Structures are given as structure tokens and as C-alpha cells.
Image (cartoon, rainbow, N blue to C red; front, side, top):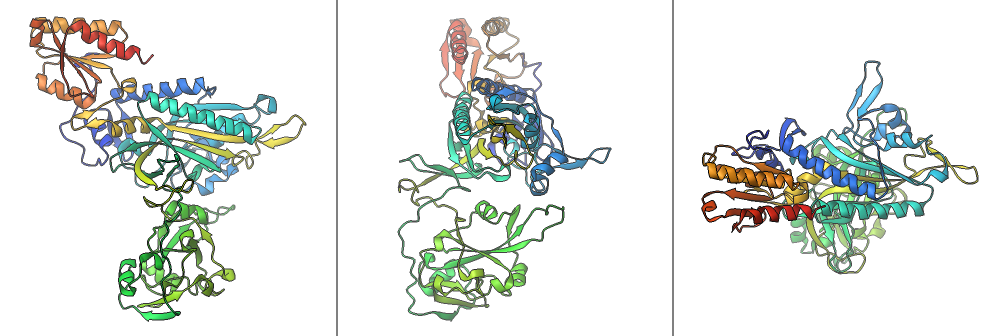
Amino acid sequence: MRASKLFVQTLREFPNDAEAMSHKLLVRAGYIKKLANGVYSYLPLMQRVLTKVSNIVRQEMNAAGAQELLMPFVQPAELWQKSGRWQVYGKELMRMKDRHDNEMCLAPTHEEVITSVVDGIFGSYKQLPVNLYHIQLKFRDEIRPRFGLLRGREFIMKDAYSFHTSQESLDEEYENMAQAYTKIFKRCGLETKMVQSDSGAIGGSVSHEFMVLVDTSVGENDVFYCEKCGYSANSNHAVSKLNDEETDGGFDKLETVDTPNVKTIEELSRFFNINKNCILKAVLYVASFADDAKGNPVPDRPVLVMIRGDKEVEETKLMNAVGALEIRPALDTEVNEYLDTEPGYISFLGAADKNVQVLFDNSAKGMKNFVIGANEPHKHIGGYNLSDITENDIKGGKPEFVDISLVKEGEKCVDCGDSLKVTKGIEVGNIFQLGTKYSKPMNALYTDENGKTHPYIMGCYGIGVTRTAAAAVERYHDDYGIIWPLEIAPYHAVVVPVNTNEEAQMKLAEEIYQKLLNAGVEVVLDDRSDRAGVKFKDADLIGYPYRITVGKTISEGLVEFKARKDAEVLKIAPDEAVERVTAAVAALK
């Protein structure tokens, strides 16, 4: 490809609406162009990258025994109604009607479709297991699309689905896919960590994410990990052992104390001269639920969380604990409506009479003589114990303990007791054990050796193709631009003649260009008449892995050779430059 013909426009400035470095660089370097909020056109450079990522995925999935197909992007509501997700998926599902008034949706995922595909084709245990995948567009109507391709509304994804007759068979395929994923991301130049995760809207009992660990603030999730035993989990799934700390408030008796304008945990700690972990914090949420089976709206419900004062609520855990579609902190007016008091003084006292669901985080279990809100303005209660709870406070009079707290760095690993560390991560892949979540309600059955029918046992395995490319940029860049891993770079090398008006420079540049092409190297010849500095800046911004510069040094029989990831510029013979690039490319095959 000649740069004069390449469909690309590099920009001097970053886009104003970009936060993530991958978003900034992909726009500025001419890889993507925004069409609508969270929707982008993939320009020729980006399409080359995405094709390479897709091909790596395809090769490794095929090698792992999966078979490729292609399923529709538009799906009928009927399938989603059968699985039960039409009501529960939420507003991310883009719903519509066709000209015949049939309800349809744009595919955010393909569990329902693949289940309908396999049902009736592979109906015997002798035909199973099978793993089917496709690489297809998805659309999820994100409420706040951001970070460019890292969280867009339209994106490209590989999703695979396996069908089994036993849990043992599913376990084997789950491990097979985990190994295939490790190979895929390694070939894309990405080091990933497989972490325990929340299953979210996909469902299932077991799930893991493959996270690219990054040093930037753009990572979607905190990843907690243990260097000693290898435990790792997304923040929405991570658990820990609390450190040995004093959680006895030291009060001699139960007493109500005037606390004028003392509302926050910090203020309460100073007022009572106790540690934060001797205060039982109350946080009121409002949970939203799916429509019922008849399509009738289910009213929002207040949920009161009781958690140790030094801990924070992990809202995904809370959402799962109450079975909600969405959950949000209550407004001040809602605190007054549901608990008949004002923020800063709330607790579970009398909650049963107010029809407020109360959940206690596990961190509250060992607390004694602690401080709680009195459910009266400017008052708290000291010396409270869990044994003081009555049926007026909580139905049955006994607290319901669940894990709904956010793990903190330094807390103890649940497996080995060593201290947990935390880093930022970008999810590029996930694997789920779905079990019979879809096959059972959709009545998708196979027949066993005794002639009895059973629902398929299923697994699900996704890779974000566009996210993987963006994560590579987020992981590998510098102040000058993108540093692509060689196997997914749009082109392997660029040849830059310093002065296109110099016949000798252009002749040698053309010779190098042709030799690289003949050797199977994907190469750009920058034949533009721009200044050398402009060409160098574009080469660094676009991120070509290798640059060969043909300039005045040809009088010495030398060219300049530079690997994008290195600062050093070498002066070497033209044939050696060609050999270095061809050897690097050949090593990929």
C-alpha cells in the first residue's frame, strides 16, 4: 500500500469527547470515526486490525474443536419470551417492531438463538457434545457509552456455545476454552489474567473473565489478586477475610445519644471516639425489577443495607442478592418516604413495619456494642448488639447475612490468608457455565441412551473483538502514539523516503518496498511529498511496528531502522533491514 492512496487522515488534536487513551489515539490516528453516541465506523486501518484479531480467534477456536456458523443480528421476541429474558434484560435490549407488528430486538447476545438452532438438529446424546461459534455484530443500548470501543453500543464479538449431556463434559469444555482463550490473547500480544466474575445478564453458576491489566485509570474494574496462591477476582465477585480488628464499641449499656448534625461515619467516629468498624452503617437503595410473567410492571422496592462502617457496598453483589434489574442509592426524599427520617440517622429499627427489606453484610457478624442510627433526626444509639433486634425491625427477628461488600486492598485472601493486591483491568473475554438456564425454559431437549429426554447442559464463551483491539492500544502506547503488537498491527512496516524528489532515495525505497512485499510483509511506502518530520510523526501515531527510513545515509550504503517499541535508531544495510522485518513476520507463522 502506498501512503498517497491510503484512506486515512491523522489529526493534530485529540477529540474533545474522548477519555480513554485508546479512544483518543484511534480517532486521532484515523482508525475510527464516530457516527453516533457509542457507534463508530471502522476505517481501513481499523478493519485490518479487527480482521487479524478475528482470524486469530477463528484459528484457535477451530483448533480447539469448535465449529463456525453465523446467526442473525435481528431476533424475534418470541425466543426471548421463551427464555424469560424479554422481561428481565432491561433497557440495554433494543426492542422494535417490524411492518407486521411483530416484536423484534437487535442482538446483544445469542443464547436464545443458538439454543433454537441446536434444538431439533442434535437431539441424540450420540451427537453431543458440540461447540458452535460465530463472529457477529452486537448492540447493547448502554445508558452511558464511553471510552470509545471499550464501552460502545455497537461492537463486534465472538461468542461460542457448547451443548453437553453431563456436568463433567461441560467442565472439560470449559477448561478447553480457557486454554484456547489464553492462546488467543497471547497471540494478540496481550497478557491476561483469568478472574472469577459475576455472570450478569447472561446467567449461569460459574463464570470467569479474562482481564488485560493496565496501569491507567480507564480499566473498567478493579481486579483483586493474591500473589501467593493465584486467587483473582473481579471486584463485583471478589471476597476476602477481614483483618483481625477490634469491632467492640466498648459501651457499657444500650443508650440513645443526641448527635446534632453528626451524620457521616467520619463524624460519628470522632464524636464517639471509636473506630469506624464499631459503627454499623445504613445505606438505603431503591431496587427496580423486571415485569411479571403477564407483562405487568413490578413496583420499585426499598432495600436497606447494614454494613460495617469502614466498608463500602458493592452494588452488583447487592443487585444479585435481591434479584433486581437495576439498583440505585435512595434520594433524600425517598429516605423520608420509606423510613420516616432524614439521611445520616437511619437504621433498621422498625423497618419490618415499613415494608423495607433489610440485608446485613457479612462484615456485621462479629460486631458488638456498636453504634447505629436511631431513625430519629440528630440521634444515634450506642451499645447495640444483633441480639437486640426484634420482629418489628426485621421479619422473623433474625438478620439475613450476605456478601455485599467491596473488597479492599490489603484484606486477606480467602484461600491462603495472604494480603490481596489490586490493579485495574479491561475485560476482553468471558466464559460461563450456563447449565440448563436456557434449554429448560425453551424446552430444548436431547434423548439419552435410555430414550429419556433432558434439557441440554450449556456453556457460553465470549471474546470482544473490538474491545481486544482497543485494549491493546490502552496497554501499548506512548506519548507519540500507538505501539501495536506485530500480529495484529494493520501493517507490519513502513518505508519512508525522506525526500521523494530525490531519485536515488525513491529508487531504493521502491526496491525495499518490493522486497518486503515479495517476502509476504504487509508494508506501506510513504510516497507523500510531506516533510520527513510529518511522516515520522504519522508513523509513530499510527503505530507501524517497524520503520525503514531512506535518506542521506544511502551515500554510505545505509538506511535507518527503528522498531516502534524501541527508542534506538540503527544505521544498517538495506538488505539487513529487510531481513530483520521478514524474520520477525516469519516468526508469527
